[in-house]
Length: 295
Ligand SMILES: [Cu+2]
Image 1 (cartoon, rainbow, N blue to C red):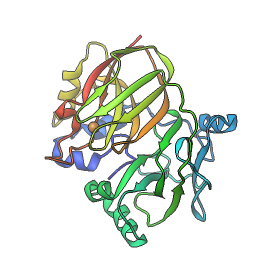
Image 2 (image 1 turned 60 degrees about the vertical axis):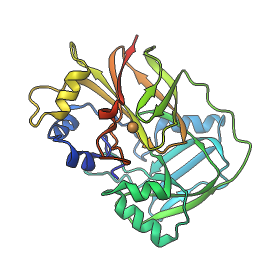
Image 3 (image 1 turned 30 degrees about the vertical axis):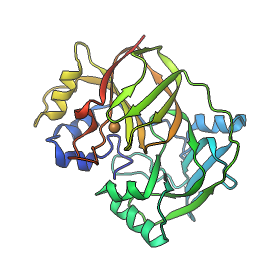
């Protein structure tokens, strides 16, 4: 389960669709990750943490392994995922910790096995834990944490750390400018929004994991052009979109808030994840793709 890819599930999707265009897509797109400081901290998240308006779940990859803040209580938590080592993946993106809530009993050996397996086959992993995701593409990430047993991990590494989220009253939720519901297989959301930085509340009310990605359509291009681009064996010319933004995949029943900054234009909203209950075709094939006008 390549949680970390800018286009997640890349390996799986590649096997299922003739997506020769994907490497081109990745190289053609402007970088979409937040700007990281040298220590790998997202500046805006530091700012949020300093305001003290929300409790902070801080998880850091360091020389001693992964460390997690103590005393985490359920409800909205500002999330600070950092990597003090500054290690990057093949695409040069900073490797950040993933977080899963354990939904079936898992001993350490089982967790290690799932982490190793997850890159190739997400199904057993997603039955055993509820994915919260990682930090990608936005600022001021806030997760609505459910109480329970969690673990945080790095794909491709044996290392993980358990932590507990206690029952509690929880903090006041951030005020959202835009609310999106992820469903099997559609987005319930406004048809148009204002440009500039906005707080998005994204809730997964489907029965499987989803993500939300955004592409700013190039002049004169539409959804059909993007679909044709993905399905073509050999994409020629520039991609039919300019900018790409992405909120990391997360499991059903979870909610998060993230600040996203959109330029005016015609955007496409899309989910690339595979349908794990049927033929593993990407969710956009089943209808998880739509237009968004940014004024
Ligand atoms: Cu989806």
